[in-house]
Image: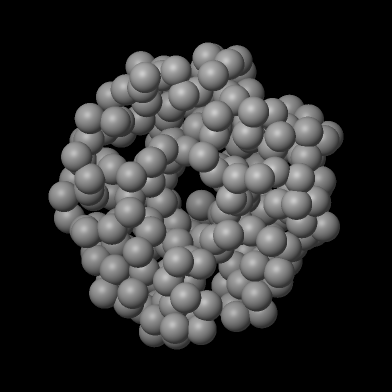
Length: 228
């Protein structure tokens, strides 16, 4: 957000913590720690619909050797193309994921490997536009529609746990993993190595995003040691 490394509490812009003014340095730090991907969210674009951070994202993508993925404000073909032009490997579609036709068209245009759908849920219902609007569609139904539209990767965030360091919603992750055949990535609530271990036992889970626990120093310096 505004060129800085920021974490929000439950997606609320008013509850933000600025961790660094050097996003490139931070990305290289997580790469050195053993991350497989760098997960980037353009919060300015998520809230305002227009990116302010593409130059920084481009710098991050060129500075690390591991792939990056980018979400936030990806609501039309132009935004997706601009995002991919920064050098990130994958674009995360959030708000417009509720439109199966848009997902199918995007998958055909950019290739399924270049896209993921980010499903952010509050009490099982989908939230969009930077989590300020909750819809009636359930996270499970949206996931099924996304897979049917050709999406292969889903990032599932439980808003109630995000940024709270109280552990992930394992039940919700299990339910999602059983509901859809895809590369499911868990997001939200990771508070330490024990949560990574617990998530690794969820059948069908492909990966996990670690956020605040990294910035608060609650993870080991070598992330690969957690599951070794």
